Length: 278
View 1 (cartoon, rainbow, N blue to C red):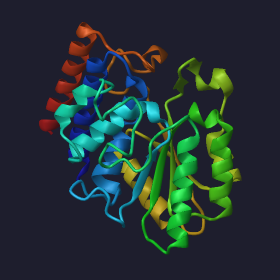
View 2 (cartoon, rainbow, N blue to C red):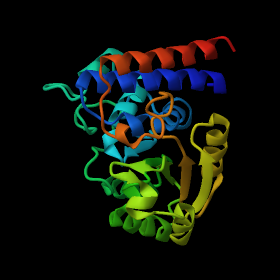
View 3 (cartoon, rainbow, N blue to C red):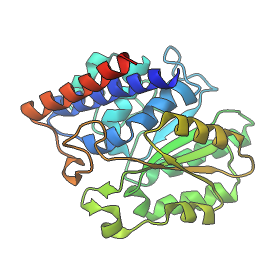
View 4 (cartoon, helix red, strand yellow):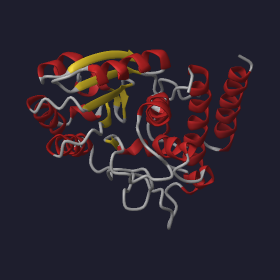
């Protein structure tokens, strides 16, 4: 996909995420929207995956460590063809396979069920080590929140990845600056994030998480890095793409009402139309 196609796809991913949360009347739109461009680049460009054969042995693995942003993840999977986009409206409904956190037993394309914050990166590091031990060529990616990295388990996993020189492993931090209780800096500052990962033996890349050219360069650099894992620190805007949600901590875990949903979809529709005119 070229940059314009990725931008158009990202709009659809955002539409799906907002629609899912609206229909559920609960969920996490802010972090889903901040990570939408990352999800889009991963599933439409970077990852070796096949919606027709989601369990193929040589597929790249992706683990969503910040599992509450499942609406964005589900929307990317659906738009990529793993399951019908129409099913996004069943988010969190009784009997739906699309629950509040990803479940690998029921959702095509999900490699690891998301548990408590911090657990995902540990599972992903284990997958990366397994590939090394088995001489397999697949790569492993995990997406973390910047609030999530306040968890100690994250740094145990990072220490292990650095120690084992897992150059098939990429940790992506969605650095939108906000978590449920306020700014990450005020709650329990994780900064400087890049220096912390460097201290654990990672090659570190700082990037604009909404710039597809920058994301391409970062993931290409990660692939070319040998002898150490890579951490991509993606600077993003919480609620990106919906004006009244952007940089507003209240939208971490709030569903839009009818009026807000209509406004959000109108804004995203206009964003898509303007891209179509380019």
